[in-house]
Amino acid sequence: AFTLKNRLPSDQGKNLAHPAIQKTQLDIESRLSTPLYSDELACKVNLSETHLNRLFQKHTGYGIQEYIIRARCKKAYSLIKETSLSIKEIGNLVGIPDPHLFNKTFRRIHKAAPSKLRFK
Image (cartoon, rainbow, N blue to C red; front, side, top):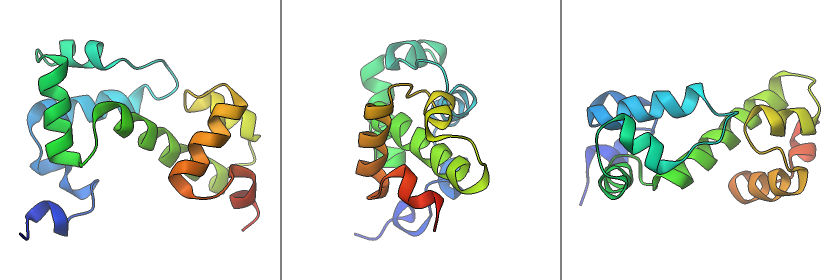
């Protein structure tokens, strides 16, 4: 079945999402460098963690934790392309301070090592 969600990139679809999703997305994006926990995010919008996770799945295609990981990797990608910060500094800025975990996570999302994208 064709749905509006299939037609819109996730960033453009934000204005169509549930208000709790919009608020949580903004909260996540403003605090990428800090630890983010689904139960705390849910509490901020007065929903249970399970309900917020279901809403996230419905509106973004990802659960909360996967959305956070993808938001961090998206930010890391732009920092790699637009700055001369070291990969380690970028990992810290996006909330994945362990270099091995940052590299592994980034590779899973972008199908390339962060260092490989720097020079393209």
